[in-house]
Length: 575
Image 1 (tube, rainbow, N blue to C red):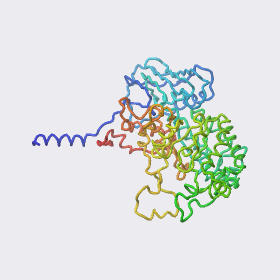
Image 2 (cartoon, rainbow, N blue to C red):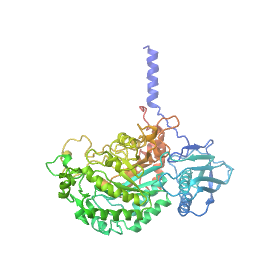
Image 3 (cartoon, rainbow, N blue to C red):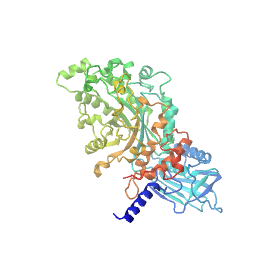
Image 4 (cartoon, helix red, strand yellow):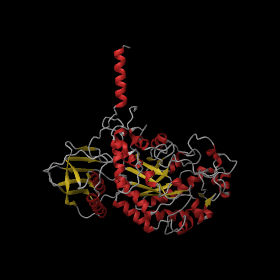
């Protein structure tokens, strides 16, 4: 190499190191999740008129009318100040925007899986009214949220010359919250659903009960909560459920209830000890192998499919859930049915001694409960274990795909592939990508591994912590062919609450669930097919800041310094 070539190479390396790669935002004002089609050829803004109104051309719709009232108040009062002031010109001769006109094609469309959430939003430069056109009331709610994010400042400004067409890629976009291991007040659930709506997430998967507690007060089986909850101040009444369901409707969020059975039912034993095997026993007896445990974590108990009273209680529970929750999906759980628990029961031991298997025992339970769920006009959702578990599972012939959806959680893309290739619709909640409680260390007491130098997963079985980039970059149809991909309904991030409660839940969910929201709404790739996590960073920073101003305690993803110094926190070593 010549001296001149060497000097030139050094110069290029220095420039490469010391000039930060700027990731300029496509627009000075952005919407989260990013719309599918967003045109703003000449970024301009105008002021909102002091008498700005939102008007619907159609007849009154209870839930949309509530949303219009809510957004009207928010748009006029939020006065959001962006972290970086938008470089948007407000022409001195521009007229203020006086109205947003909403036109909905089908007001009767119910809030259910697959409902059309598409919308078009037009905010012209020289007309005093913007127009929001949607196929359904639920699509109109998504458009209202988009419009609200295009308003900022004090006095309020709004982007003009904007044309948006938008619709989700995946119909099922959710958050699972476990309210059994630790209790969450109604206000915490309401706040979570409100934040979900702002992120265009549409399914609140409510994992209501588990072995640790049964907090739901059911009209037909009140003893389950009276004896199985953590106390009378940690129960959900039918009135509480009604409020949560109605709040969901007003925000375009379905409330999907899960009553996990036959496993994870130790809390039922407080009311009905005769129907629960291995209740209140130590979860992993000393001197036994992991395969011989009674439960996968402290809190033992599984419903006994051989006891006749089991089905009387379960029928009452299913009927009450169907009456309380209008959601067409019913989540029946059926994960982690542990052999060691069932074989402690003498009746089950006798059942097995006659040449039968634990899989046949589970089939007996499912063969009774699945038709009963379907009789209430519900589609049953189960965790993947019911089909894929190595030791206890159900024959496919007992799980008709017409009435069954399987939720993948324990095997990454491989589990999704196995479910879809078997012909089942699936919801993806891979613990490798979507379990937001992972990476906080173990929670077991008297654990000697903490007396050793730190190594491995730190006691968290699903470590490491799932960063927002991990959530954002996951392709839930990876490795699937076209037919299998069509069976993927969408995905959910999950918060299991062994180490979560209301004091920390906002920061655990947000803004990582926002990453899921965009990936499932408009995708995680740009128009060239390249993953866009890099340019998403600045947008997510801004959106997280706005969520905080709206009362959601979302955790930061970077120091504020990074936002104020564009490009300086980026890496030059990206692949």
